[in-house]
Image (cartoon, rainbow, N blue to C red; front, side, top):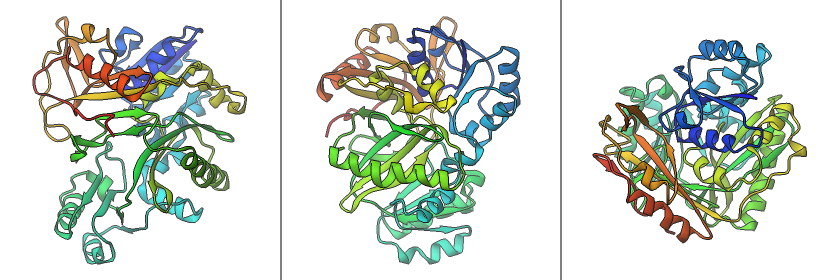
Length: 417
């Protein structure tokens, strides 16, 4: 079986690694892939947003199944394009991908079907947004409507910070057209959990829970990033909380999708805050989370390829999905300065030695002149399993000690409650 994975990060490395373990031994391709993925898949120099080229490659190489990693390709309609040519592809279509592609669409969707979320308002001009800040208690959450690589959220601690954030987004166009419309919402206090689920259009099956660390610095300080680490299962996600999430959020969302005539196939990610008033949705993502993938998939005991096929075929209800009882911890090693300006091209030393202690997923790397070099903000994701959080955490940080590159940065408090 020939499988094409679209994307170039640690998430795609995690998917490729898990698929490489399948007894069916699929032939793996990845577009564009990275230096780590190249060890287990044939990398193809096509970007995720180059849908016509991806389609051409899939047709010419008789690809049996395509897995979409990044949200940009989904929002641009890669699934629709592939399905029109009769190709099998894992991921939601363009209509369904609006749940992540537009914060406004997602909020209206939740409001219409009474899916619990934060109180909010939507604005498409600077003056109205500033004038109505008075209606929100501090701190204030400001989100760009469109895609912003996980960085389009500002938590303003006072009114001045809120004004500056709105000006940066709508006036200075910090996020381009993605910030033409913004959502301002109340700040939810509580414990955060990520719940990903497989969906085949009719059936939805939650995966093992996870919790990611979005802030750049220890103590949950600094700027929001695409993620600096994760644990699975999530802290504080009790059986009572899980029951509430399944009934009040996941089941309601599935029914809402059916009511809207949205045939959703792929992964649906629920970013949830466990508040004193019950669980509430922070955001939807329409694909595997990153770095959640790097702690969830190592705990999956079932054949991921089988699950993908069942989702595409609409037969998820027949799947038997098993999870390891081990805990998983991952830590992101990033370029200094991320998520803002950073330098790349530095040699990475010690990856082979680190593999003895943990699994190393490449996020932003290249292989040049016989050596690995940095090529992105997030460079490597170090993931480990253990009988508890402490054991997994110790393994991950033991591996990190063996890796070095100039200007490296990582949080030292991942998996500490």
